[in-house]
Image (cartoon, rainbow, N blue to C red; front, side, top):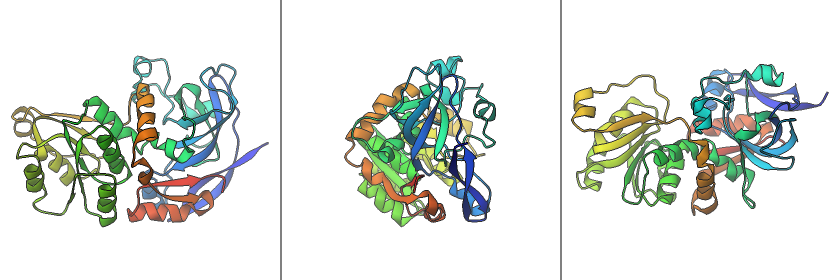
Length: 339
């Protein structure tokens, strides 16, 4: 029985590496040897001592199921999140992330844990693997998950262009990825955050105006920058109620806004915010899978995308990596699961 390692939270601010049986591919599921693990918000569970499964990875296909036709052994791939059915209308349209008929991961894989990507090997349906262009590292390619994905999906949805000013509220890894995406499209970008490290990185990535979220005149400065019109697009990535309010208040008439940061409840005034201003608000979780060629184009050609990755650690030093994420003084943090 071949074994591999996975990282699990074993106590408050403590990660342990434990053994698990390497699963065997079946049907159209394939085995991927993970080479890069981007960290997302798992540090929140690490701080509390509760496990939080990873959902991002890139690696090499090392075995395929009997019905697999999309990849072959040796292919370098990015692992898309989730275990959708692949057959419903949403999956067929590429909106797989919203599938209502997800596979039972335990039943499909025989593993006793839930689809975590903080592992050395994982199983995934072949159609959820994005081919990595030649010359692109696993780490850089893995930005096609959460590093660039949610904001890419929102800007695609809104058809953002050089004629638009985009407000990005929250300059964590996802918000910073939004700057990369928006600048690649030629947009003007306003970035708002409270942490100096992130504000400085936002400037390095090309934000045209960087503001402090705690500034009581932040909305006034946004309006001045836009000639008192307001921004065309707002991306709320902070998950905070003040951030949500700032996005709505800063939008121009008939502007568009996407909620990307997780938030349970905010106050929206239907008449004042929606009807009188004529704005559109939506939620954005990920992006349509048909957008993979475009997001790979960003990864290949953006002059600043490399700056989004700020730290790299071996899996044997996951506690340090989680501490960096918790400090919020970082961009995207990468883990090598074989070191």
